[in-house]
Every structure is written in structure tokens, then in C-alpha cells.
Amino acid sequence: MLYWNSLEEETYLTINGLLFSQNHSDQVGASQQKVRKMGKRKITNEGNLDSMVLPSQNDVLGMAVKMLGGERMIVKCQDGKERLCRVRGKLKRRVWIREGDIVLVSPWDFQADTRGDIFWRYRKNQSDWLRSHNYLKL
Image (cartoon, rainbow, N blue to C red; front, side, top):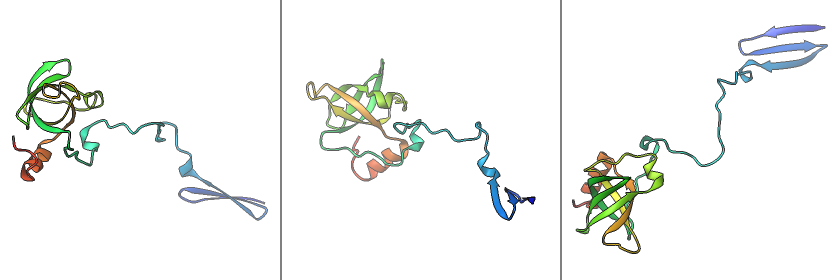
């Protein structure tokens, strides 16, 4: 004997006393399925970042003073030097840096007094936290 029993999300089929079920929630269209890509997790904006990077021994905090174009800018660093810095490629694609922003600079191994790489930009609340915890003295 053949019987169909339909509930909200499942359909049961009974054939000669054997019970077969089909879950309708599994039948989602391709447009509704979440597509996952393999590879690195991409960060599209700063809102997705949870942690804040603190300066290490070789890094210097600074303030972006003047934009020069070509992802380069003059940064007045906390050690009293002005460096010509470039924005690192990973940061360049996801963060806009404006004049007056607090940035984290990694001085180059050679020309350490005049050149460096910007690898982090602090948001307003993060820069206030750095000032209150005596990391930033600018």
C-alpha cells in the first residue's frame, strides 16, 4: 500500500509498512544557497576586524601629515622624524588613509630615518585608547 503524509516541512511516504521521508528544507534553489570560496579569508572593510595592532619594538606610531599621491605620504612619527611612507599593498586595497589619521609605521632596514611602510591605520576610538594608555604622545 502507498500512503503520503505531508507535514509542514517533511513529506512521509509509506510503502508496505516502510517509512520514507523527504525534507523540503534541503531543496533550496541555487540562488538561495550560500556559496563559499576556498582560500584566504578576505577582509572587505575595517568593521570586520576585531583586534587592534599595538606597536612592537621596531614599529613607530605617527600621524599622516601630507598626501603625495601614488599611495605615498609624509608621516610625522613619534620619534621626532618625518618619513616618506608608502601604504602596504594589503592595506591599500581595504583602507583609506587621510591627513590627520594615526598610523603604524615600520621603518625600512636601510634609510630608516627617512622612509617606511604604513601597515595599520587606527580608527578614532582606537587612537583615543592609545592616548589614554600612553602609547601615543602626538
